[in-house]
Amino acid sequence: KNQVEQSPQSLIILEGKNCTLQCNYTVSPFSNLRWYKQDTGRGPVSLTIMTFSENTKSNGRYTATLDADTKQSSLHITASQLSDSASYICVVSDRGSTLGRLYFGRGTQLTVWP
Amino acid sequence: EADIYQTPRYLVIGTGKKITLECSQTMGHDKMYWYQQDPGMELHLIHYSYGVNSTEKGDLSSESTVSRIRTEHFPLTLESARPSHTSQYLCASSPGRAGGLETQYFGPGTRLLVL
Image 1 (cartoon, rainbow over the protein chains, first blue to last red):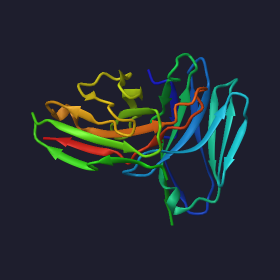
Image 2: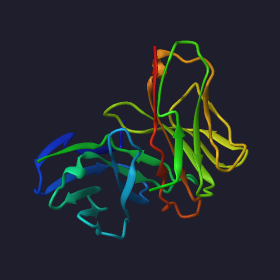
Image 3: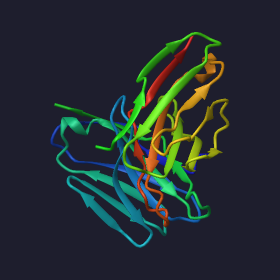
Image 4: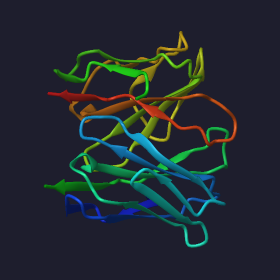
């Protein structure tokens, strides 16, 4: 069973609008949570990384939040641009192994229309 | 943009053929990984390496094999391709520092279609 659930599965917004993507996880123990952006036909690129002690982290127009108590995270995109069209993947890492195993969500496919 | 490369980017091949997917990184990273990703699905780890001559199987069972003879090179081989191997294969690397906070840098992926 996938321990990282993302919603919505897909989202269409108009250029310039804001949007928020959700990530719920059941991974335990918890080490950190990352948001990746994956353009079509490309590999994922890291946007943010947060540990359990961090509530929010920004990277330009991207702001991620983390509530480690409820095991929820969100990625807020401000003033969307056409180049924001991509899949956004939530990745949670446990601390139970040397490898720091990563659990991947299926991603939210965001499409920004002009 | 990360300096990690994969070739070929696209491959269409017949059943039973042997194929090797190439992955190289110029960042001197110790750790390297292979993931398999089907459309609309999550990434699954199939192989990883902590360094030269170190290879381990990942979470998802795979008929592929890997080798790590040089730090910068981590090729994946399928001895006999089958249609069930059709997928996207992503290679990644990370510095290998302790703490688990290191970021994995991904290559552009190889899209494999086995007929």
